[in-house]
Structure formats: C-alpha cells, structure tokens
Image (tube, rainbow, N blue to C red):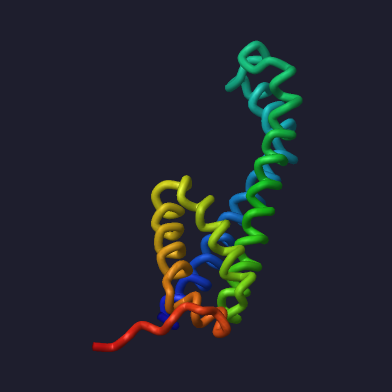
Length: 141
C-alpha cells in the first residue's frame, strides 16, 4: 500500500500542476481578450455586431474567476498531496475532499479521483497515517 500512497501523491501533484498551468492560460487570455477582439474586428473576421459590447466587458472577469477557482483547488490539491507524501493525516483528509471534486472532471479526473479515494480510504492506509487508531490489523490466514 505504501507504493499506492506515493503514487496517489505524485499523480495528484502532476494533475494539479497541469490544471494550474491551464488556469495561467485563462488568466493570459483574460488580459489579452480586448486586444485580441480588436485585432479580429480590424481584420474583419469578427463584426462589431457579432459580439455585444456588454459581453466583451464580462468575459475577462469570468475568465479570471474561473482561473482563480482552478488555482485555489490546485494549491489545495498540491498541499494535500505533499501532506500525503509525508504521511500526515490532514493531508489524507484534504486530498480525500479534493478527490471527490475530481470525480466530476471526466475522464482523467474521474480515474484519479476513484483511485485516490480507494487508496486513501483503505484500512491499511488509515492505519499508516494514524498509528494510534483503533482499526485492527488484518489477520493473516
């Protein structure tokens, strides 16, 4: 189970780092949205009547909010994964919560979420993270 725990920690760090990079792209797109739309209008690829002015004002804000949420979850996921790699109980709990949110990100998030939940809720894992717990060791036949 030790190797599964390490793999869950590493996979979550990689997955959250890639998500944070995607959030960085959203932030860049938010900053460059107005100049990009102006360039498209000047090149006559987009007509000023195609995109209402009100929408053009709110798109960067929406991109920044989405990027902020992704960055928040990415930071929490990375912190939780580091806690799991260090065998801290708080890291296990935090990563469990983040893993439940992974389930809605089909297909990679779902696969990672199911695997993480399976590993982190395993009785042996709980015993490794909390040696003082009252969970008995599995009996060997």
